[in-house]
Length: 263
Image (cartoon, rainbow, N blue to C red; front, side):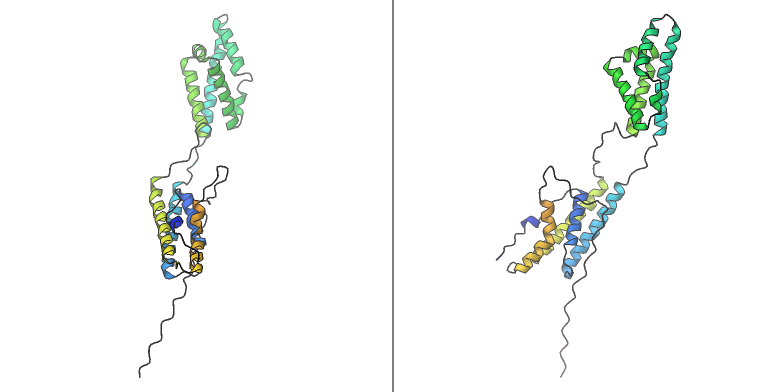
């Protein structure tokens, strides 16, 4: 006779909203087509908790209005143009030592003038980055400050960093921590899943193979969620906004006995 071990179903093995909602969908999909009222109540609580978490999580991760990059692009254009103008002004000094140094700097940083400022946003940032790397690698910062003035390179670096941030290039993309408002509905759904699992386990008739098999089918998503995934295996969590399965219909109530006839 098959033995039923409730241990693998005793805890909820998910931690993230996406994984917990995937588990909830799996349990709803695996529910019996005509559950008893006892199980149906737990399924209803599970689905309601899943819907609450889904709603809160979608709102918490709703994308914000993107920042318009045009003002940042224009600011960077102005900084590079200002630096070039200052270097070109050095050429008017005649035999001054600054003239030769300014010519070399112009040839290094502006071999084609300011053409790179007309490139698409990401390409312009890359060309700006290449020039700033040259300045850092060749230790030209002090010389540029002497030729153009200390404010020019500093302002240019700030405009370059802001431009890269707005374009999403220089900011490191990391998973955002779960908003605090999501934690309560996440825990509520985990508790509803645990309550449903306990309800199914409590109805198992351990001397009935069909009862055991039915419980295992209903709770199989818990085993699937617990199964370790290899490092090369892609995540299987469904999108957070994927629809939730509908609740099954209740099994018909047993007919009430006919009242005894009065003699």
